[in-house]
Every structure is written in C-alpha cells, then in structure tokens.
Length: 439
Image (cartoon, rainbow, N blue to C red):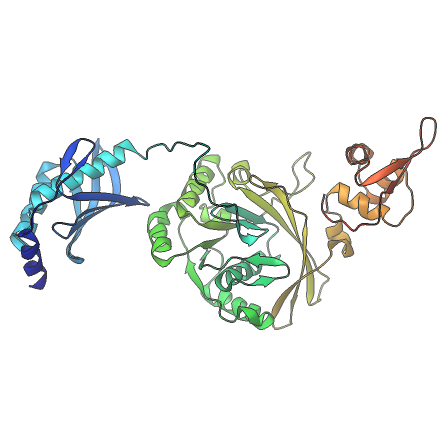
C-alpha cells in the first residue's frame, strides 16, 4: 500500500517536537473553525479531526476521523477525550493497520490539545492605537456593510426575495444597478420560504431585465431546519467555497418560528459564526406598536438590536400595473449615519419573465412620500415657495403640530427660515430651492 510505504519513509526522518503551554507535544499543531478541530503532525503526515464536541456526565466526547497523507484511514469514530480506554482501542486498530506511525502517543496528545483548547477558550485580543484595522467598506453600497448582519424587512409579497436575489447576482458579477454598487464576491442564498425552481425563474427574469448580470452564479441551498442546527457544516461550506455574501430568507423561518429573546440571541450567535456579510429578510407585525411612527422587524426586539443595520422595504403599486415603486428606509445603523431613503421602480411583464429595477424619486409617489422623514416632507412642501405657518404645515402633512414645531426648531437656519417676530404670525420658508430627500 502506497500510503504505508510513504509513512514508513517519514518514520525514518528525525522527530521534531514543539511545546504547547509548557507541555511537550510531538510535532502537533491545532486549528479550529466552527467547532471542527484539526490536529496535524507534519512529521508523520497524520491528521486527526474532532467534530461535534459535546459534554455528557462531565466527559467530553467527539466524532474522530483520522487521515494519513491526506487519505482517510479511520472515518467517524466516537471517542472520549478523557477516556484512556477508547483512545487505546482506536490507537491499537490504527497500529495494526499502519504500524510505522506512533498512533498511541499522537492520539493521546491530540485529545489533550483539543480538550485544553475547548476548556480554555479563545484568548482576548489587546486593542491599541497601533491595532491594524481594515478600511470600512460595503459589500453592497449603501445597503450591506462588510461582514455584518443587515435586515431588510417589510410586508409579505412585496418583492423582498426578488430584490435580495438581485443583490446576490450583483455581488456575483460586481455590477452597479440603480445607483447601488456591489463588491464582487460569491453569493449563497439560504431559502426557508420557496424552492429552487422559483428562484431560478426569478434569476432568469432579472438577467432578462439586466443583461449585465448574465454571468451571475448564485449558490442556492433549500433549508428545512433552524440555522443553529446546521451552522457548523454550513460555516465549513462557506469557508471551503469562498462565500462572501449570504442571504437568509427569512429571519423568522431560519429561527425555527420562535420569536423568544433566547432563540433570537442564539440565532444571531450562529449568524456571527458565518463571518460574512449577511442579508436577513424579515417581516413586520400586523399593527404598529403604541408610540411607533414606523414599522419594526417582526418578533423580538433583539432582532433589531442584534442587527447592525435595518432597512424598511415598502412598495406602492396600482392593481394590474407592471411597475411598482419601492422605498427603502434606513431605520437603524450601528456603524454609519443613517442613509437617505432610496427609491426604486421594479418593472415586470405579465408573464414575470423580465424584471428590471431603476432609480426613482420617492416624492413622486404619495404613499411612500409619507414614509419619508418629517424634515424631508416639510422641506419638499415648502419648496413651492409658499410661506406657511406651523399649523398650515401640520394640516397639509397630517402630522402632529408638536412634531412639526419641534422639527422646525431643530433645522432652523439650515433647511428653512422663520419669517416674523414677537407679536406677529410666524411663517416658514425654505432657504433655497435645493432638492433634498434625506433628513
């Protein structure tokens, strides 16, 4: 057997040892990724992989696979990391097969290293003014921050999945569409909502509407169990395939349908292990909570808290029309200023064989214009040159007078100016005719 002959040749070379935390280890190095521990010996060409570590009755157990010179010699064997008996049994079986390798010493030391790493945990990192950091960048500018979870949420049936698929195709090709720019990478679409045929049809329609996406390739994975149950093999797939951008459709389904704070916290802990930019598609509750001016993500408040950025997705379309107007409203951002609202049109033919997105001005649609920030709505109203009292503005915009007065004071001298003085009726007008959508 060629592997045995090569192992015997390695055995005749001098032994190299290294120390780990003060203990002598026979030429062993350890690495860990997403709960999979690899212990390798360069001297012997052996590698031990420990998967699915679990603790039961105070004892750590794992699934062990053994490789020699890259070839599997013992796949998936249960082992106790503190059980000398099971370690000796496995080492004996390996020695009978390939006697030139000191399996007993290698395996016992490998088990000790994995156990020590598991119990010690990851060391802390010191942050100083000399700590090297990468420039702050977007995967999809201005929507998706690099290596951070972002939620786009809205009512069902609004087109969120099609829009997410568009972003995934843009990442695959590095294209810019409707003023939204994507950094080229590799996309993975995790789907709890639909099936492969639906998304293949949508992708083909998007390519028909945007020929620049013709070379798009998106890895697609239908999912049936909560993300936390599939996270470790998923992380390994992401690392092996070089995935940079992940879509999760949808947040509630991927959480197992449980909106409790504990489940949501575990879900975002799993998302963090992906170490990629992650777009989560969420839904909204049926009614606004008391005191809320805008919809929030359905479920636990931890959905909003754990996401680094959230965008509300709203759509306006007349019945039977081919074109819909979409508004994206930046409701939360941990790392940047909140971005101005983004307006898009989505046009599709009756057969849904062509889908095209283009930039648009949200002020041209009555329903979505009402979702703009109050300061933007006041500015847009005053740009007709007519001076108005706060009462006039509140009536025309259907916004509480106290909110109008507070907003006028906040941006006085910046967005608009007050005409009149003590004892006079005060009116407001714009400083200039500059168009402005954002707040």
